[in-house]
Amino acid sequence: MSFVLPPLPFAPGALAAHGMCQETLELHHGKHHNAYVTALNGLVEKNDALKGKSLEELIRTSYGREDLQPVFNNAGQHWNHSVFWESLSPTGGGIPGVLEKKLTEDFGSVDKFKETFKAAAVGQFGSGWAWLVLTRDGKLKVTKTLNASTPLATGEGKVLLVLDVWEHAYYVDFRNRRPDFIDNFLSKLANYENAAAKLQKT
View 1 (spheres, rainbow, N blue to C red):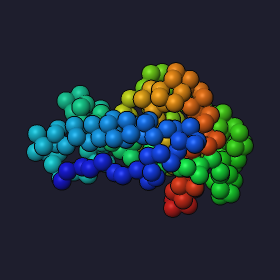
View 2: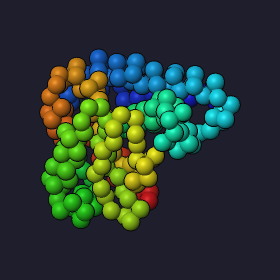
View 3: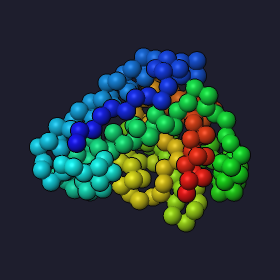
């Protein structure tokens, strides 16, 4: 079973008016994400014990194992990016009532959630990710991970929304201004509709 690069859920130029240009998407999706998929397929092909495993199984199997670190890095990045594309929308930024109610319940307000998410995303030193997850006890939580790590591996909760804070995610559009990139995501690009749908499926 070979893994494939998933198509973007929108046209490459669809986010340009909202702070993420077509060049960014072509590089990020077409080059970076595709490279992880290609590398992962090559690693699995060389290891009979990994053949036939789903992406999620590969992540859980390789997590914390030094001998399988390259597998984890590429599987994690494939999974993380696939969720990231779903977390973006050309009509993003609007928060459905069901999610707004839950954010207010668990963070105090939508603004407080955004402050917490931004702090996590800004505070992730180096490369990584900022996440909104639903924990096992039914509470929304903001967390962050380094490099290719993911809540799928750490067990922190079900992912509702994610932001990639590797420099390649924002350097074309925002240069070194990560805080501005995060603000733009939260106000214009975040697919809260998708997050709300995931919340309601629990």
